[in-house]
Image 1 (cartoon, rainbow, N blue to C red):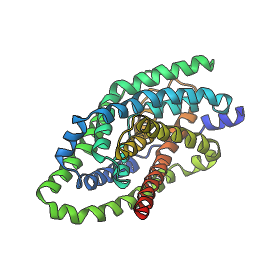
Image 2 (cartoon, one colour; image 1 turned 120 degrees about the vertical axis):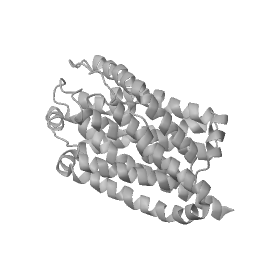
Image 3 (tube, helix red, strand yellow; image 1 turned 90 degrees about the vertical axis):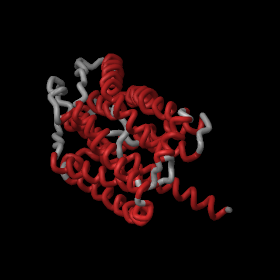
Image 4 (cartoon, helix red, strand yellow; image 1 turned 135 degrees about the vertical axis):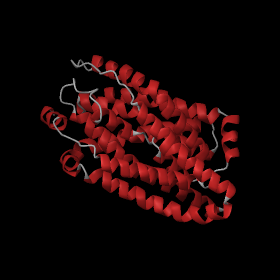
Amino acid sequence: MKEVFDFLDGLQVTLNAGGMNTINIVLAFVMFGVALGIKPKMFVEVFRKPKSVILGMCCQLVLLPLLTFLLAIALGPRISWSMALGMILVASCPGGNISNFMSSLSKANVELSVSLTAISTALCILMTPFNFWLYGNLYLDIASVKADVPQLVIPLWDVFKTIFILLGIPLTLGILTSHYLPKVADKLKKPLQWLSIIFFLAMVVLSFWGNRESFLACIKYIFLIVLVHNLLALTIGFSVGSAFKLPFRDRRTLTIETGIQNSGLGLVLLLGTSIFSNLPPHGGMLVITAWWGVWHIVSGLTVSSLFLLADRRKERKQ
């Protein structure tokens, strides 16, 4: 296994600025389409009964990092220390913006989804560095690895851009369109939903193509690990929602919100800063984080489709 780990740690993954900007523009456009079906009074209802919001935050900020750490320990020698840190880094990141689209697609509680994404993104300035520091150091101590976990510094511009530009502006424009131009909003909703699906499929290709050689070289090593990790995240959201008997729409939202992480922020931290420059070769962190960015789009679309199929089966029985 040492040869495999040395190979993974030596891999180079590039962050294409043009590709990231294209993805951000697509996300903003998609968020506008999602907001066309949102009414301002819906957010009042979410926070008037905050149980789902609190549970969603517990899933993302507490349970996912903790159980990811335990999963990394359980995998033992099957993963390298840098792959384990990659898993912990992804779990420490806030929810991804595409979760809002997935919630809309699966007929989950979109207002709850938007609220959870916004709150976790705002809190990531504190929680992402804390969770990564805590569980990263715990893992290295238990695994007896001689390396220091670097102190994360979240770029404020990236957080502002996520909250305000990619989330706030499109949502505001979409809600205003829905309120003042309801006929236009009704005509745009379905076409934009289909365009969004096409865009997300294009994002999978875009994310993969820029680093296709690295991914193809190591896919057989990281595919199963990311699959299990992502399945754990999805299970956390659904199990907590079910255990506390949340409405079905809210259970779907917690499932999707916990299963879709902002791995793009993880890549920005890994590649766009000098935070990790003092670590030994750590390509395992890069490939885990990068493949998460591709895989959670695939898994999110799959879970959304399963939820819709469940709805159709219920309709047929009725």
